[in-house]
Image 1 (cartoon, rainbow, N blue to C red):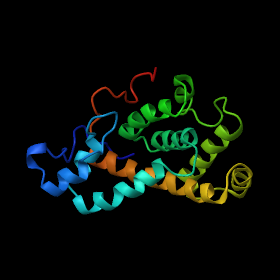
Image 2: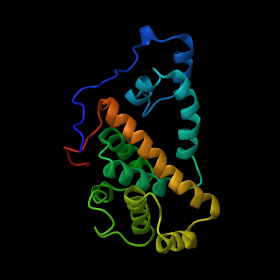
Image 3: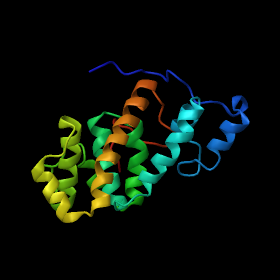
Image 4: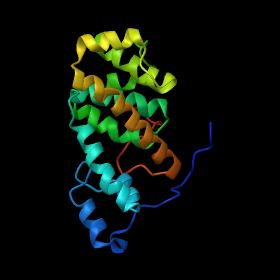
Amino acid sequence: MAQRPTAPRITPLPVADRTPSASALLEGVTVAGSEANIFTTLVRAEGLTRRWLPFGGKLLNGKLPPRDRELLILRTAWNCQAEYEWAQHVVLARAAGMSDAEIERVPPGPEAGWEGRDRLLLVAADELHSDWCISDGTWHALAAAYDEQQLIELPMLVGHYHMVAMTLNTLGVALDDGLVGFDRPVG
């Protein structure tokens, strides 16, 4: 595994250095009421960020139930060892109804006492991570639980968060204040 940066390679854009268009782009883009390092870092590539935000926002408010979405994102964050992504989505997973005990069971994976749809989602996330495709068996089980739009959204969600993980890991985006990384228990 590549050595991860120990400090941000690209720092968040300070308020004083923001163009009016960067400030407008960041307006209202917050996590838990405050600016997040992900957005204030990525806004340095303003054109990309302008196009990326609506897509990411659509996935966060898509057709998949919020709890299912967050379970997929947490597993993807763990699989990619994306600590920033993990920390942000622990907060969102709680808001979507996941318990701390459930969140703690995400790292060990589908065999850690998961059942039904939860287990199926973890298997799908793992297959996409390792094989870049959902197997026929997993697909047929998903098709019994989700509609066509949700089935399309699922691999797009996992793929999107792989991209986000690669970006966050490579840039060394630092955890925002108050977030818990991999080194401490969730609860």
